[in-house]
Image (cartoon, rainbow, N blue to C red; front, side):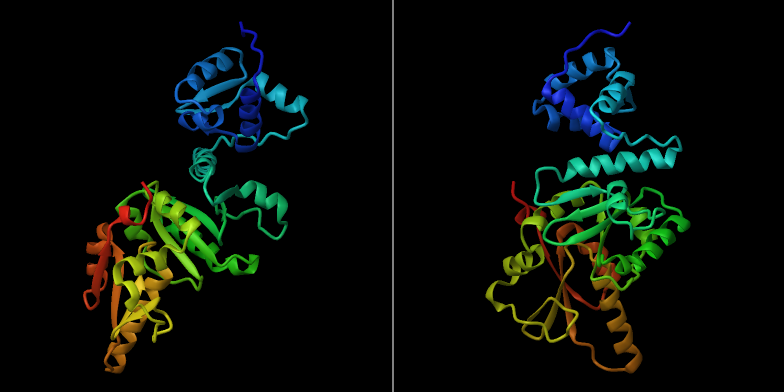
Length: 303
């Protein structure tokens, strides 16, 4: 038998958010209830009263919860039954909470498709990250198939038709990063970042120009406007490219430039890469002909 529960303001907020997001990870409920432990007791009670139900670490609307959102005129977004689609809905919900209370707003792709008729229903991006600029957000997970990677890249090549010029692709294993490769797609930025670790860098990037800040911390006042148009800065006779955000578009441009210089038998301008300490080996392997400078992540991210 369901128990009777008098809904609090936060309970109502939770039910309304579940109508919008479909599923919310249990630990993210602390953002709604603004407590560290009380929310677990509250969820147990709401579950007994059939307002919510649980599934593998996530909460979703129960029968009474569905009744409640209908009674206040809210349209509920259902939960897809297919495993891959359910995972997608979970990722969208997680990203919403990852950026909650930061300079960024993450907007669910389902909402965007309703608001912008020009966005194709079949689009596979998870949503838009909107703040000091705008990114389409994708995830390739841990073990992406070639078909999945091809589909993600193919869609990014068409983003300009929707007025979107930047993307973020999250990966969840070193193998996924390698499979994705370093192919430029003609975007202004194509950031390939680990999930969830890349979130902290992006949060910081939302409040300031992280590229410039990293360069200033390492090179100080010796920074000048770049001579090579694809570089970020010049320092002495070197062209500096800042790759802390692992921008594939920049990586592809360095690769193309070095190949072209070799093909033409011309002396390439010396390129120096500035990256995070943990990225050093990856870029050393990618660009043995470039010098590399590093910066610690904690120097860029507020404690």
